Image (cartoon, rainbow, N blue to C red; front, side):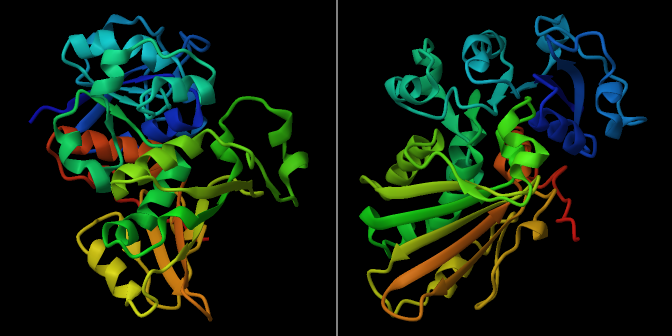
Length: 345
């Protein structure tokens, strides 16, 4: 088959360069256009020296006609951009994968509350498929528009899915204690993310309300078929990549073999690895990869269970999952272009 023609809108951020890096080794896809208003006319490999000798594209404006020649468009843009631009591509039969939040929340009022923007595309919102591959694989296959999940929601949902599917936990009392590297805040200049501000420090943020909270609550409730309540506290840790979600849940039956439940649930999932009993995952084990590692351990007393889930926030938490969605959309093996294993050390 001919290679899938890929366009990237908003190619200068961390998710943009991750798309370029990963797609460079994809055997059945080729990036033919990358847009950026701010860098239009500059060679991509001059802006990203890591691509020297690997990419001869030049950043174009977002209205470049070459975008209309694509089979799929990735929006790696700030919130609000895909909402305005996705429809025109979909009308031309071009698939759209949005790495932002414009189509993640089903309720447009919730979107306005958490993102401060009015949602003006009711039809697109109602037709978008939430692209967490291990949960919505069948819906993704026939989608025209995919809402790529956020990084925290990805790590949390994968950690809880086997428990919710098997009705093993008390749904109103979930605690999600999460840590992320600084790249999760994006590439824009921000004093709070300077080396001197984050190095040798550790802090919680968004305790009173983080943008990923309504997405997590929405999707867990859909998975459970009823309302799920959780306490979600993200933390910023002094590293570039990596994310760990540690979930504290109450088992309804403390005698259940949770290890076997998780191993059975994910035995056929290429990108999910359930570690052996007694092990704990580490973020560097998945750094640069699209893999998620999960471990479960019971607390010494009572019915408390601890579930640990680690991903690379820029890969499985963003660009890698977007490519996994593309692979499903076009009927390809999900792991194409995503076989990189974690970098150690």
